[in-house]
Length: 334
Image 1: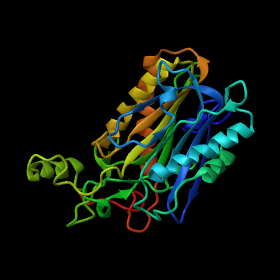
Image 2: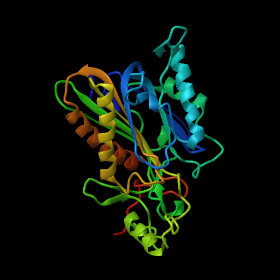
Image 3: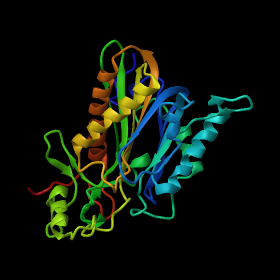
Image 4: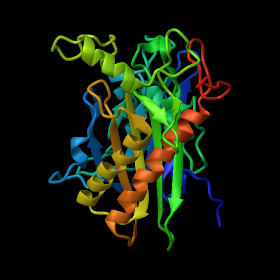
């Protein structure tokens, strides 16, 4: 029996691969399910960047996805999905059409152009390399794949934020049913730990070793605004986003997979404050890669749990880079 990894790759049939650029600080992460997995999606942020997500919604023809691509690079990074499509086609996977197999690869991107190099982004070649690297081993966390350029806590602008990253987690629910998650954490808001204290987030300009508390900062915007939304806010629109995938080997219909994706956002909101702002493009996919029986409410409830833990694992694993402190090696003054 394979050892438990506390990762989305504990779900049978799910493979994960990273490709990244450590100098440009950007990358992508592919979640491969080559045989196809029933898919769903729920997008709650106000500034999303996505590709082929409508195929996963109810009342659409396609039932299964063959991969999900998570990438940096803002809208440019959507091209990474083309590399996954090429890899899948070369290996004979895809939606069967009379003249060809068409791989279904929904994708979502995050904005990391403000860190590293803005002119280097994930492309089809990087997406292909991520597929070549995909396996059922526990994927690296922190500054890896789509987490390479992630940052958090930017309510006072990037100079007072901290490094985010990519994390994963899983839970076994009995009778062989597993639920796992992977998330790239690039949030506008603060990250809260299991006790509700700020783990990483916006720092005070006068004392960068202290947290400013994003909600306290936003209260000052309310006082300074003269009725125009965002008038007193820093120029940070669209420069955030948490993207992720939850997966299970329980059998779900397409409608149930969409419900699980929806419920998994509860986990995001538990550990990110505020979540789902107009500056975030928060998007979570759900994949059902098996046929074991378990009530969808149970799957959804634990999808939220593993999503929250994946987010915390990603931030805790992040390494500092120039100008961006990380949880590792840094302690806030209270």
